[in-house]
Length: 138
Image (cartoon, rainbow, N blue to C red; front, side, top):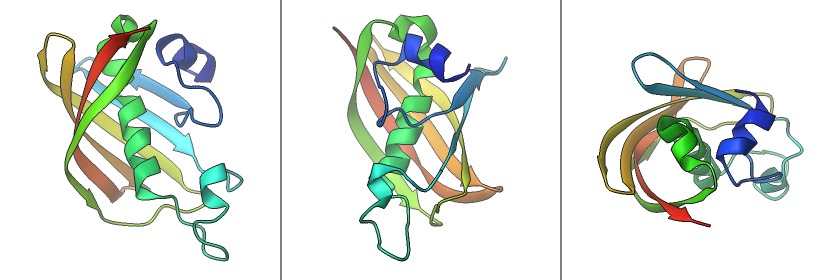
């Protein structure tokens, strides 16, 4: 999926749409990418002269990648994240990096979903953790 196709699933729009492309493989694993351009709003003050993507933004990238796990069921709904657990930050992400995200669904209870995700740059682990979210109407 490209950005326009992603917008059919996610309610996020620029500047908060933080995935450039994503897909789901036969095993049900989501794969997404985001290229850090360097002009993003979150880099302007984090940190002057030494820009680093904030951890909360990396978590949001992983969260958005999870949308492909529920597919068209997410269309027209708002994913509200209900938890982050066991999140570990391993390596900084900087302008020019391409963040590669993988996510898989661990379980579901009604409209609540539980997933694990990780983000890497050039094969190096940057962040990993477990996320939970609910699909809310409207």
